[in-house]
Structures are given as C-alpha cells and as structure tokens.
Length: 243
Image 1 (tube, rainbow, N blue to C red):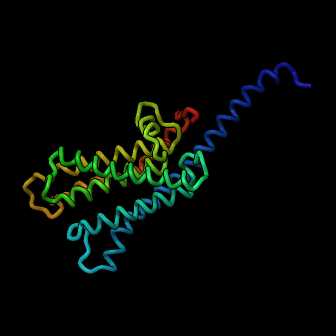
Image 2 (cartoon, rainbow, N blue to C red):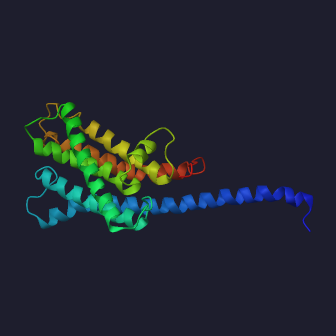
C-alpha cells in the first residue's frame, strides 16, 4: 500500500522523469543535427577541392561562377537528401501522387520566386542592373540555396510556417532554431562581404560578386556550426510549443 507521502511525491517524480526524457531527446536530435550540418559543410569543401584536382585552371577566384554553380548544386542535393532521410519536414497530408507533384511544383515555384526576390534586393542595394546580370542572379540562387531551400526542406512550401518560424518565439523545434541561425548568418555574411568591393585595393576577390558569395558561404558554414552549439548550450532553457 502506498503511503500518503509517496503519493504526494509521485507527481514530482513523473515530472522529473518527463523533463529528463525531453532533455535526452533534445540531445539525440542535436547529435543528428551536428552530423547533418557537418555533411553539408563537407559538401562545400568538396565543391572547392575536388574540381581543382579534376579541372585545369580551376580556382575560386579565376573560375568563380563555375565554383558557385558546383557549390550551389552540391549543397542543394545534400540538403534535400539529408532532410528527406531524417524526416524533418512535416508529414504529408496525403500520400497520393498528385499531392506529391503539387508539393514539388510549389517548392520549385517558391524557390524561383526567392531567386528573383534576392536578385531584385541585391540590385536595389547597388549591384549592376544589366552589366554582370548573370553573376548577380547566380549569387541570388546561392543565397536562396542557403536560406529558402532549407525552409522548403524543413518546413515544406508553407508560407505561414515560414512566417511563424521567423517571428518572435516562433520556433517549435531545434530544427526551426537552426533555420533561424543559418538564415541570419548567411544574409549577414553576404552583407558584410559587400563592404570591400568599393575599396581601391585592386584585389581579385573584389570583383563582383566574389566577396559577397564568399561572405554568404562563410556565414552559412559558421551558422551550421553555431546552431547546434547554441542549442546545446541552451537546451534546458529551450521550450517549444507543440505543433
């Protein structure tokens, strides 16, 4: 027979167990995030090293657009593969072929709109309108890959979910928090990369849009490592609302 004292302690014991289980689950998710982010970071390194071995006269500066295209395709493919395998995105409401085709079509449409939007924003901030238009659009595609594509992989083509995640206290999972950090770090990196362009240093990396693409890439990689560290450090304080 349970004593009154033990009955009084039972709810507290359950509460402590639930808290411990939540912390353990967060630790497991953080480890999965670290692995995923490391693979994504490695894909950027491989996009820089492997072509340099296989192609003549390949360099980040000399053949910058080639590097940009390889990096964009590599990061996009790895992101899609990893988040599909991890099952991070919300479950499909329907399992029909037409629903899946519609979802993929909407994702492609959102991504293209994001590229055009970034292109317009970059031009408004001083990028050449007609001259180097292909370079500007390629930079916009890279930025969309670092930001919008990850939104599509983690949240799906759901604009309301995107608005929620990037609103105050809108994150509902550690993946939402990582999305906030990597998106912000990519955009800030691209913005900081624009500062050396007008300076009269005559360096090869000052040619548009090299410094901006490098800044965005370094910012993205920094965000990949900062996100799990920050989440792990604050894991006991992070409380997410149920979806």
